Image (cartoon, rainbow, N blue to C red; front, side):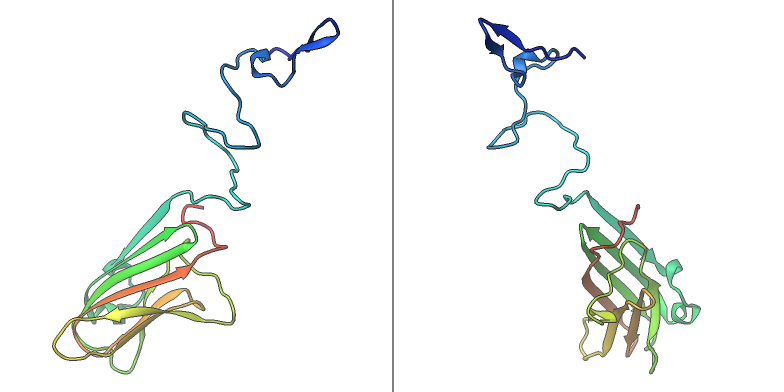
Length: 180
């Protein structure tokens, strides 16, 4: 690239070094660091921050099925299971469904290991995040579920054979993204 040369005529600068037209190979305008500027066309930026924070770079999704359940004891009590983890920025959501063929008795069971990249940070002495559990039917049902931070697993307890739906949300700020 050619160096920018300061031209003078009668002792006065003819083109300032910052003048765009004085730069070979540059057509049009440069983006100013101050004021409002329109940028036309596709631009790729590395290490971009806005107000000191990196922008959201995409969303990630992981689906766990029956084959991913941690325990054979639990597999014998469930006829179908699907859980989907979604991460956008620092927020992870989970939604899932299980169909059980019997209640879990007095024990709660680990259903899934929370995948790497969808885990939460440990903060304020908390040890778990509750998940909302719902089930449709004519009789009330008892069920609970939570995300145990200590062993990074989803824990479930249900009272009877039925279809159950689960939802939850937590912050994954400070943790790596699934593909990192």
